[in-house]
Image (cartoon, rainbow, N blue to C red; front, side):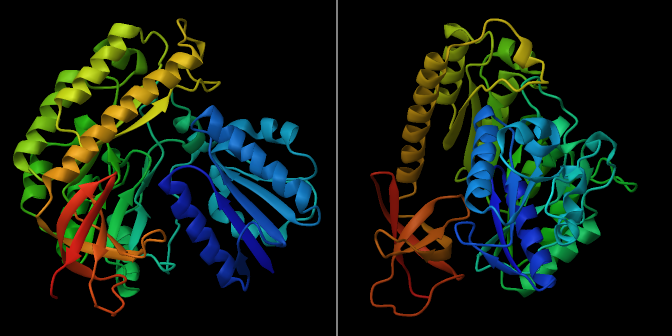
Length: 436
């Protein structure tokens, strides 16, 4: 049995697809690229934006038309919220598996007939996180580990709570067991991911918190580097900052969602913080951890975002020591409050504003890179760069470095090595391997 998997969307989807792949392998299947002929194709869909939903439909159509004899399974968030749209858009028979049944997908795939089958339930009633586990690092040096799923926030623009359900956490014991498996397989860095990881532990019978989990695991695995994916600004506490400063294997890297620098727009988005809270937090982090990377997300073109409101976003990013920015245009999702709001921003204006934010973010990133020239960091070497042939590595504070190793012919892959940053130019950072 040959199985091909295709993933769209977030790191949680990627983690779940990797777990599914291992499930197929445990049943004797061979995993092949989706461009090759297979007996089963699984597309793990995304619906966070209209574009993501469109891409999900496109890949399903492409596979269905070119692989007429194969079983095609659509899974994930877009299936959960837009099953009928998929059925209307994709020719032929497609099996639909929602997020509430994703943990059973491998078993279902072997039981399926060739016709239409529909496994989509009420995700809001699901009270426990799906018990996915990854046993192999798949050649990677860093592993994404999903510790939480779902969201209770209901930001007005976001479809995720309807696609993923309420917040659900993996118990600390199961997280530790997952980390131990990866550690035994040689992984050097773990990135905790989830839909809303700041809410970790609040739903468990024995309530806990993200900070308690971090303390436990950084202590249990001092040889591993730990990193967070994205976290809300109101969920980074003074206790978390002081702990991070004193913990050498916690990476000084924070990705903190902003979305808008206008308090008026933040309120319309149902974001539970103000621009001043965000400003104060970033300044606290920079003072406590001067070399830390601080990333941000910005949503441009939200309904009602006029010129002055957008200017506040640019001004806030400009004045803060932010390292990099991810900019996204507002995409109205049916079923969300924002999709029905008035004063929509034109597509042309959203493109213009997105470009302005990205340009500003790139300037700040380059400035951050230049600040670290001549400094020495422990870099995790991840592989060879295809264009330059140099080794590429990642510093604890999230700087990608192209490493000149001189005449060293040894395999540096998956090693943490001292590297001196020598220059930063044209969007790239170069470093020299020191004696090790």
